[in-house]
Length: 285
Picture 1 (cartoon, rainbow, N blue to C red):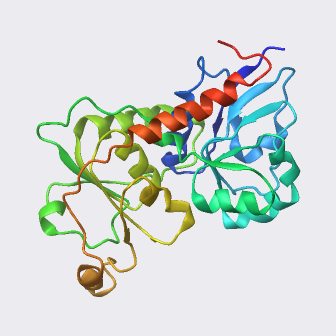
Picture 2: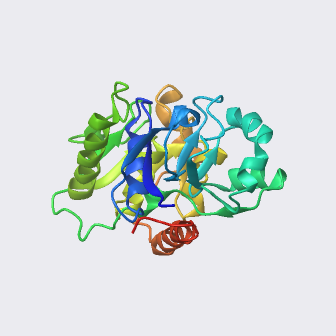
Picture 3: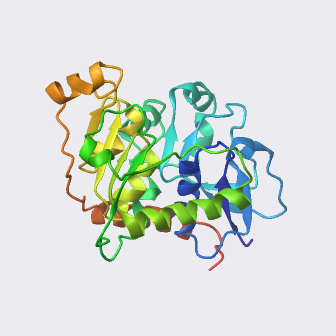
């Protein structure tokens, strides 16, 4: 039986989800023919089996699990949020069928292993976007959803301020928008300052220096530290907390960070997807 290639999408109102969708499509043997709503994955109907890379965050609809019977999941870059854990716990046998599960972060891998589900730490497929050939000569500083962060005036002056939030539009609109934004980062950014994980990871993959603010002990974002990056404490650097004075005292920021070499991570992720696709009964080449 031939297996078609599908691609997840969602209408979350966060273009970072579209980045994750685009990253998964890089690893398919051909362009996806089916687009499947992540938050209604249990409702998918098809006469033929669909191979679907499960890269991303699953939690918006806890009732949308397990996936429909005609979906063959490729678990790489899989993240389990706290609110999704009870659902996964009830359906752990489903995951055992497709083990080892490629987990996005250590917290997800440990939770799966606590259920007796074999896991492999793969990280997120957004780390496999191609490295740009060269940095722009007159690159811009991008501040992505960083309006609450205390940032030096020298960096704020002339910076491009954008958000990853948008209306919950159809994927036919948001996926092309994601392509354009990724290209903009790649071609024009000399530095990205962000509170968004899926601004940080794609930019790191493309060879762009990133300053990332979040919660250092949050298992969801631990992937940044795992690949050699730094997570600065978003609370300490808040404008509302004496305009970030505690951050400057206790969590000093390197505002000129080096690019990170994630070549090994890219190779591991690519191999993890390829092994799982090659193990299918029949894969469209």
